[in-house]
Image (cartoon, rainbow, N blue to C red; front, side):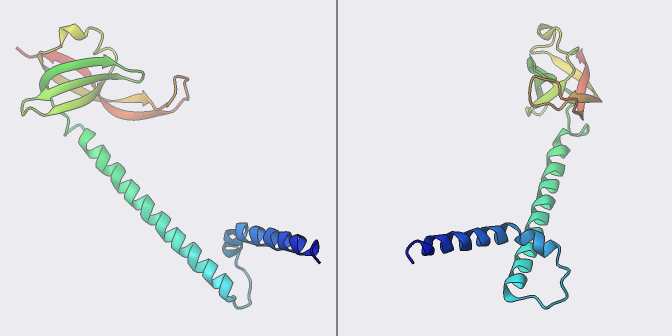
Length: 159
């Protein structure tokens, strides 16, 4: 009897783990014509709650992505300002600009704009933007993914 109890416990635990891992699959395949037991209806409610939670998270992340895109739209980007810093990065050139109201902007530019940073540093410039394709890779190796961004393509010193 002492040797039989751990074996039975192991079998029960194995069945329980298997049934839990298949619970979502079973509720998705609910084609049974019999009335659901209490356990089945609880699993269905749980899955429905998870689906609603996931949908809410997707909606909030989509609205957050829309909010993030608005400040970088072409209309929100300054047309004139003073260049404080120009740094070439891996994916694009990064420019720190102070506009006429004193607001600091961190902007992206094509590499051609940043070829001679000493020309523009601490000078008031006018900017021209254009939508460009930028690599969307998170590593140094090329991945073939690109995204479209509004980048500074031309800078002229104001007189």
